[in-house]
Length: 161
Image (cartoon, rainbow, N blue to C red; front, top):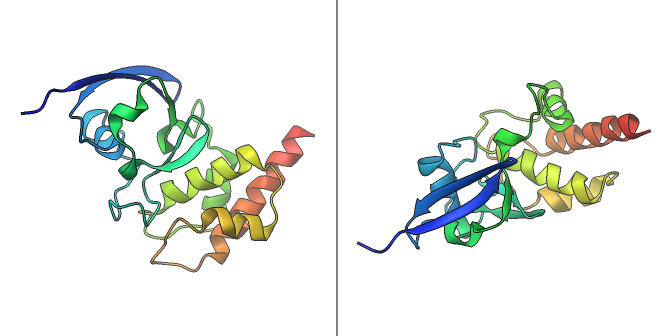
């Protein structure tokens, strides 16, 4: 049995401490240790984007990050997107624009879209498609997803004005 590592990190604005094996991915720890099951496992090799989270402001595939690398980092997951029971504008837009079907890819798409809008508040369609290219959906075309992100960007721009 390998030695477990103690990791202290901030997840969704809450400082957390956990023990993990050196080989465990951030995805495994989020789901199996911290019980934050909104982040989904799709491919477990960085190709589908279902496990996308934001780590220190950068979109990452949690399956490709070792949990020990989260030491001292800030991690945002889908569970932290809504604030005080109020859905994020992206979540509202995805619901209203039917930007989802089975739901497995939805958390990853939402986190990718949030990372995009955090860095580029008024993206054009091409930029949205580029940012979402690392996320796969097997149920639907991408047009509704892209339109949902565009709607959320417009809504967020109106609230900033």
